[in-house]
Length: 247
Image (cartoon, rainbow, N blue to C red; front, side, top):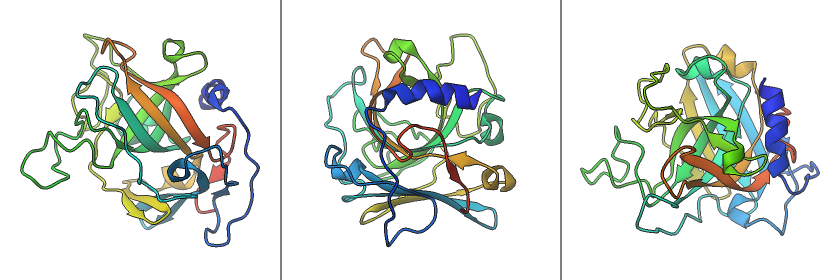
C-alpha cells in the first residue's frame, strides 16, 4: 500500500534529480544541487542512522538549513507551514497510530500562525501556545488527497466522532499528527532529529526518502485541514523511498 500511495504522490514532483556525490556527507541519499530550488530547501543529502535505540534523521541542503520560515498571516485559515520531511516505510502503528493508516513521515516544521505542540514551551517564555514559529518535530500520516490538488498529499484528517488509536503526545488537532517534543538541531547546511524507539528494528529495516515542502491550512479550516501544496525538493526525485537505514 505504501508503494502505491507514494507513486501517486510522485505526481507532485516537477523534475527528477540525478544522484551525485557530496564529499562531506557520507552514505544515505545524495542529490544534485538545483538553482531552481531555494537554497535552504535544496536537498543534497538525506540519511537515517541508528545508535543503540536512537535513530538520527539527517538532511543537508545547499544553503543554510532553517534560514527561511513562513510569513505570518495573522490567522489560522490559509496559513503556511514550511517543512523538512523524511517519508518512511515504518508502519504508522509503530509510533502510536492505527496500522497501515498511510505514509508515516517525520517532519520538522515552522508555522508562525498557530502552535501545535501544547505540551512543550519551545521558546521558554512560560507560554506553551505561542511558539509555532520555532522549528519543531512531528510524526505525520500522509495520504493522497485530490481535495488538496491533483496527485497531492494531505495529512490524514480524523472525522468528527471517530476515535482512532493515537500517540500519547497527540496535540488534540483532528489530524493524524503527533507532537513528541524532539528538538531538531540545525548546524549550517544540516538539520537533524534524534528519535528514541522502543524497538529500533522497525527503523533499521525501514526505507526512506527526503522532501522539503510547504503545507497550508485549508481556507475554510475544514477537511482536508492540512495539505501539501508546494513540494520544493525530493531527495530521490520520485518519492520511491530508495534510502536504507545505516547504508
